[in-house]
Amino acid sequence: MAQKKVVNQQLVVKENPRSTEEAIRKRAYEIFCVRNGGPGSEIDDWLKAENEIKEMRATTG
Image (cartoon, rainbow, N blue to C red; front, side, top):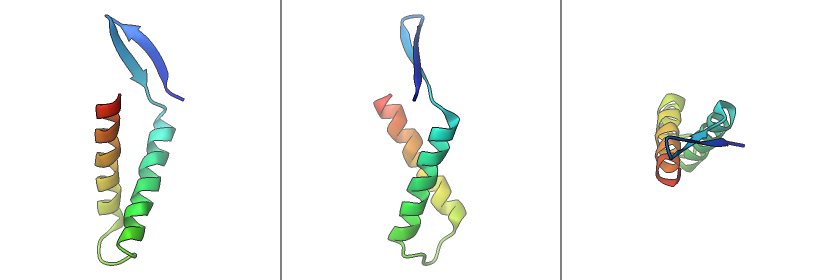
C-alpha cells in the first residue's frame, strides 16, 4: 500500500516499487494477449504498459 505524507502542504505518495512493477507486468501481459502473441516484442509491450501505468497514476495521484 502507498504511504502518504504531507510535505509543504502537498500530498506526497510513496509508491511501493514492487506494486508498480507488478502493475506494469500485468498490463504488459494484457497487451501481449490483445495482440494474440503476434508481431511485436515484450520490450514494446513493457514500455507501453509502463507509460500507461505512470500516466494513470499521475492523473489519479
